[in-house]
Length: 341
Image 1: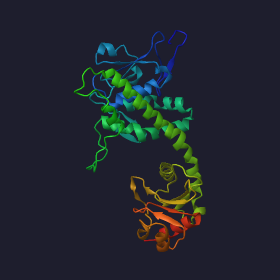
Image 2: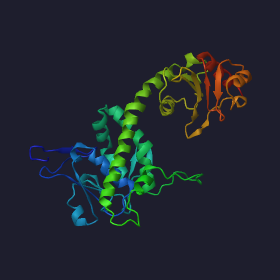
Image 3: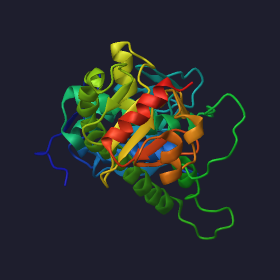
Image 4: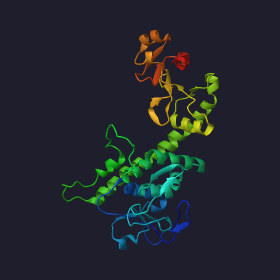
């Protein structure tokens, strides 16, 4: 319950503190009618913050109503963080996240830009350094696509080979009342959509902050030890399996060794060993150096005979990954693969 004794001051990131009304429950304004993923997600983000967790969502396009709101998203034709107005439809709006990201922001991106770090710290309790890493990763993996879709930014400049209709924006769009649905309640549909976007947001932040980020130190140590694994420095062995690709690309860039690593070795959960090719940073389906063509698609004894390496299990038909029963066998595979032309 909001009382005089529970005076709350909320600090917008990069902005001066703003006093939220201490006499009433705060209100978040957004437009009525058909809803889109960006404003639904923006409202979900705000409601996850302590100062807005009990906030009422008011859906209207009436300027007089919106003027009474503590914060307004995706409506009103005003972008003014100091007044907590976050629309992106007005002429001349060009706001982007920055920090290497250039996609025009939707209301989701705007709320994330000004509240995202605060939200991550609230949910994860992590350091400023880790907060910044999670902030960029969650934007790249999740929020940026919402911004792009809402602003009509194509995912590719060329022709796409297939259509994706299972992304979050599409799923939220389908939660609007159907054109032929009678007695529909758009506000109830909006609230259900908020639950969907909230679950996705929490999953993204948790996955990045508690699963992906802790792997960085493992990859960093393994990369530093690569010359003890193979004299070429083109093979990295993980002391335990973990999400490694994005960390590797970032560490390579930081250390100025882009494209040098070709293979990563690790033990799977059954005790066998895997040889995985490092893919091109900009195309996950293209390996820097695929495994030898004569091995591809072969298994077990046939593969062992063809390669001359006992204990081989398989090589994928595209040559991006292989399995071997022993560490020694995996090392022989990369030795031969590196010299194959």
